[in-house]
Amino acid sequence: MEANPEDLNLEAATSWRAAGITRLSLGVQSFDPKVLTWMHRTHSPEAAGLAVAAARSAGIDDISVDLIFALPGELERSWSNDLERALELAPSHVSLYGLTVELHTPLGRWTARGEVAEAPEERYAAEFLEAHEAMTGAGFEHYEVSNFGLPGHRSQHNSSYWRRVPYLGLGPSAHSFDGERRRWNEREFAAWAHRVGAGDDPMAGDELLGADQRLAEEVYLGLRTIDGLEIEPADAKSVAQWMAAGWAGIGSTPPEAPSALQSLPSEPSSDRLILTPEGWLRLDSLAAALSAGRSR
Image 1 (cartoon, rainbow, N blue to C red):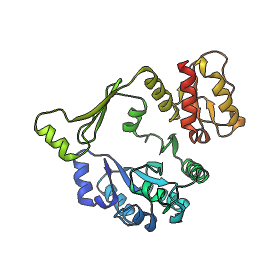
Image 2 (cartoon, rainbow, N blue to C red):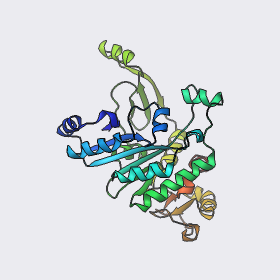
Image 3 (cartoon, rainbow, N blue to C red):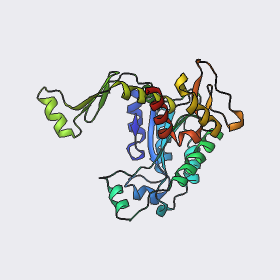
Image 4 (cartoon, rainbow, N blue to C red):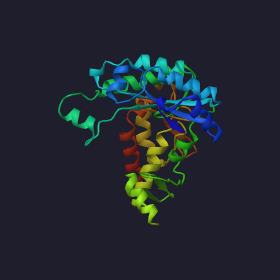
């Protein structure tokens, strides 16, 4: 179950545990009061600790914490402090997401007017790598671009998406996938409820994935995790270049340094390509290059 710190007290957590909830994802985002105000979050920096304590008192011990990085420099946020505060909560899982500026959102409009400046790529990369060092140093496995888990605590829910497992979504804006086609429901509750009440399918749209789209997804999703992507003969040139740059390795665990990289096998095998944290920072371009090579 997902919740925000202000939603959680002992009474609520107890009812959730009685209903079968065993894992809780908590939307903390930051422990800096300036950041929370800027993000229009209604909880205080102390609320996260109180929420975690309430969940544990109710018997929910498997707790994930969400944080956001690469915020505008004007906020003068200490990323190191937020990482330390998150680890002090002793979660079993942590999700870290870089802030993205999208058009037609308040942040997009503020950025267009010059009121805030998007974090430069250098700071985005530095904060991502700092998080990797802090979390892995605390015993967490960096098992997916944005996710860290203690051994045995990977997100099974999200892992299904990364493996392209079919799933059914219920409710407003929910998405479903059957392996070849995606569909999504009406976004607004009123429109969704009206169509359901009339006995209609509340679908707002769908998309049939072609062969190239399925290939691109397989490559991109495979490279997102430390389970990696099985190497094919067409990958050899690109993979050799990435390994030389320290962006990828072969095996079940990403290497710590380029000197630890293994040589690329000359014959097709079951070896898998695993991106390093430096490689994950280049995920989009690496996935595009690999997809292009395989589709020729």
